[in-house]
Length: 298
Image 1: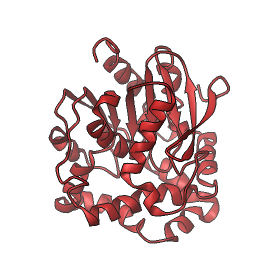
Image 2 (image 1 turned 30 degrees about the vertical axis):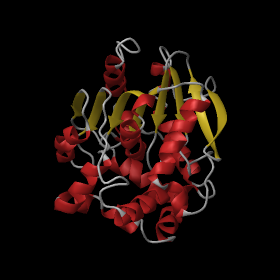
Image 3 (image 1 turned 60 degrees about the vertical axis):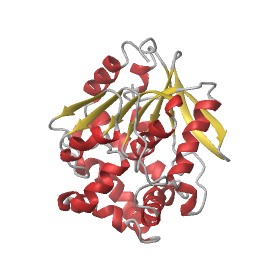
Image 4 (image 1 turned 180 degrees about the vertical axis):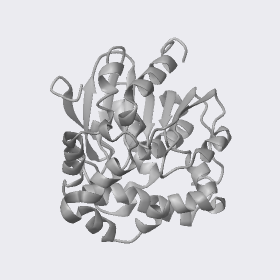
């Protein structure tokens, strides 16, 4: 399950950059969007299961692993990240897709589903709040501000990258293994894979630039680009690991404010932020159940 020799590694030229992605299976398109500091490999447990019924594509997001890492914080603005997703769906010859997203992948998928409703048939979000919900909690919820301290540290130029590189990327290993409740969920090989991806030239800056660009965008326009937040209209499944050190469960109580369509929130107790890697079977069965009538029940 952890090898990728039978999965296709390909490149797409979209939105003026080169995106690397892994592809498996045939059928309706399911796009898997990873978070920080990860890459396509975070979905290794989901790809083979989804590929039995779908065409599964797991890209390295802009700035990560084998995808291009353009210089400059402005190249990581939310609008640009959303255009990457739109470009990839079109490049793959599809008009729309199911989006499955975790962490920062969710930070892109939530607004993408709201602003490109014709391109998203179903939305599955793993441990990531809609941007407006996170902003509200950062402003009003002291506990969430404490949990999100690293977002503020990431605004400092160069220093976060230097800290994460120290002692053979020890902080990357600690971020994964330190947060896990079930330490056996990630092998030494898995940790080595994440370190190797983080060590690619420009990758740490690329990943951290998501936070820097989001922060600058918020300072310019706290209520978003338009002032009025568009809402998600497609059927949405949220899978939420309850022991997330970065994001409090209370954030999920406000998700209905961002969703107009059907919303189903499933909690996984005793599980960390790395939900699809720590509890893959539960996550897989929740996703497959949610997609059991798809594509008929769009």
